[in-house]
Image (cartoon, rainbow, N blue to C red; front, side, top):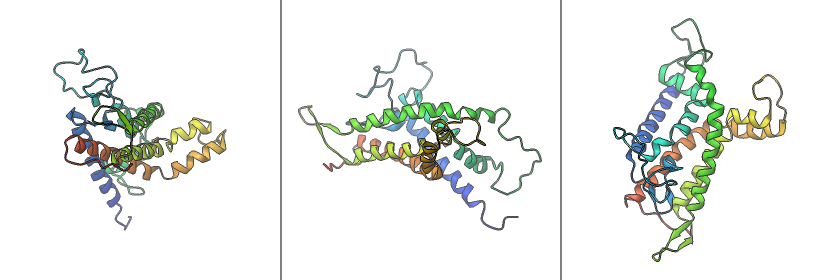
Length: 250
Ligand code: FES
């Protein structure tokens, strides 16, 4: 009975998320053009094994199955992917836009029984808080990538301090991902205390309120960080392929 265009938002979300999933899957399977100078694409960071100078443990491991496509991104992307997939905001968004269950807020659905997230498979969404721990680790790795993006080798191979557009791109990526990760509902309860009793007041009200500032705009942070992490990969890919020039600012 909703007379407004209630379907517009789920449709936009469907288009936005599908575009991101298509691009990030394509980029993750490329296995090349993911680094340029001191920059490493956030889709490939941390690079445990790989051919770039950023690799921690050397080239492709011998235990990798011969029949499987190899890309350093495949070793790590499950963690940030799982974090977003189980995010409270994204769940509400993709339940509506991908399988119309429910189609939108206060829009009726054809079936009678609501099973919620209390049974398999959706009960698995409760792993979100564990993905949060991993996501926080990724923030550290990505911040270190920004530090590395401040040092550029000259013709003699000596690294000197500088700031280029790519540095700014990677720094913004950490800011947006930080705003998204540290505004997580689970993080609010982690730092605010009372982890699993939402009806009780948080034990540490001030920190709870502090995280709530970010949490109030969680949807905005979610979309900004999603767009920017994809753009960061694209930027580094274009620089690596010599299609875009990385301008020096400082
Ligand atoms: Fe969205 Fe945790 S609720 S990241």
